[in-house]
Image (cartoon, rainbow, N blue to C red; front, side):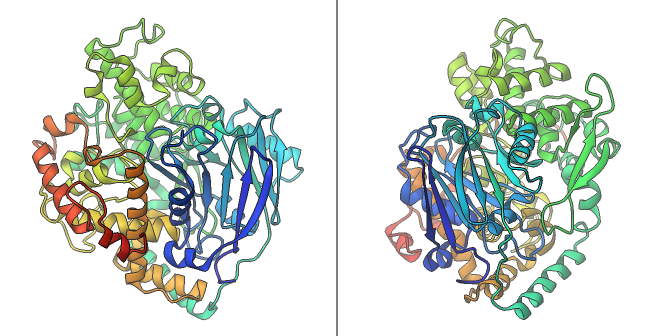
Length: 614
């Protein structure tokens, strides 16, 4: 078998209670590398795009890659793919920690879960052998309790577990999958797991991962480490601050979204939830397998009524529970983050849904009669935290919001759609893209919906001049070119290899394709050029586009919320910024042309043939 891979695929059919092991084809490796590439390929080939996302025919695919479980820094990532119940499009989400490496050590590169169990169950994989075990006694538990109960049941505290909490069991379309304290957060794949009556996947393994050429690997790894050491933030800012430092930097750019995107730039929340205050809550930090950085900051809430709550909020969480809700209480943000992790929910979607409800109450579209008597006003910290719990348990107003802002707006009516901040059903992340046009185009075109991780515009957002510098983030010039590059490079180097996107952005952006190619060649024994790595990313993007088109998505879905197209930012460093419809259409036309797609956004036969997707 090639280096870097366990060489096996595990199929578990929960309906038939069958477990089958298959060999990993070399062509699959050559064409898709691993991770998200594997997930998208199997989703496209084996899942009916019109299948019910919460039905037994939807497949849930866990996949790692050749960088996982070897000594590549910051590469313990598992990519989880299914048809998203939140969007109806490709749902792909990622998580770090130790679970990804353990999956490789347990003997598998891919785990494909099919069907639906009659009763609650979990999958136990130990040294290459899998079994289906009853989860009746752990159904209804939080994610920390679930993990501990399984470890106790199997009498091994070193087991690594990915599980759902009550939100996934209750089929909230914002439900996530949690391993240890790490979340595969977005697109509602926790609900897919819950719909299959699957509470958890538990792993234990000690199988070594072979490297084809150790000398070449050591050389490639050293080059990567040198780039990481040369970075001004990788080993200095990230271990101390984590992503929380972005609250200050994005506020300075005038793109930290405030009040459901209605008042971006008009207020400064950095004294309340910015870096200085965030650091005052630090108590420790978490690392992933083979990560020399350790960017996850563990924080302790210090003031009532949230005293004693411990969470690990990232930048996105400060936005969703702070900026978009106008809650200037960092302890409330920590508490909301912890509740989301315990119940298994995406902090971004949950916070945006609450900010949406707050604006509807401000506009009179919702009243206290609709919110269980809760004063859901902007800035009400206790109300926000209470509604987070309600969403997880589908209680009252929480039941309405649990399916995301798009579905909630359709149910509410009365003009609520205008205030629903989403693309393709996925709630917007923490960047007001009126002030960053390449990132705006990325939100509009990403195959998962509004997803910062699929094509993060490093040139505009963190001033990295790769592949060329951006002098004007408000301009549309060459932004289609940047968006395509960002999406395809990230799809290959981060999502398929896989590798932590923070390393790409902050350290190896300048050599990302060469770095990935050199590591792949030395680990696997296959020859990969930088151009071939890029083509893998392009192939993934096009394959995902095909699935979405078959699922009914059209050019009109490559869009942004009406607020971003009709209301300019009123104050701050991005004052006057807007993405008018005609400007977006111009970028889309250029983007489609660069991708080899028709004017309707459909890949041409020539492009599909070029990528081997005939």
